[in-house]
Length: 139
Image 1 (cartoon, rainbow, N blue to C red):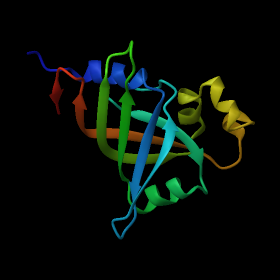
Image 2 (image 1 turned 30 degrees about the vertical axis):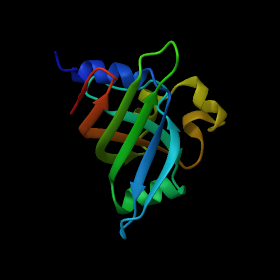
Image 3 (image 1 turned 90 degrees about the vertical axis):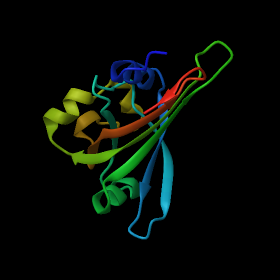
């Protein structure tokens, strides 16, 4: 059976709008919260999210940038896809980074667009991806 490629996994990730972003504090306690990647997933598996700089998730990433993302796509007429991504998060407030990954639907949460005070881009570069599709599993 052929193994799923990184390009196919990135396609799965683009097709699943919401995932859970899990951070860990210095005492090992985890916290997950739903995040939308807005379909913005590079061919290499990097995922991008927007947040406010004062949020708990951003503060957690500043202390420990190792995070995980969990994607689930199930349904009667959908291919079942489960993805668990381990990676390192980087934070950016550079205008060019914000512009590159901005999509208009984000205006709902950031009313002044990339000029919203305290906006930050979270880029999660995957170091390990585990996937299940019902008929296939791998890393």
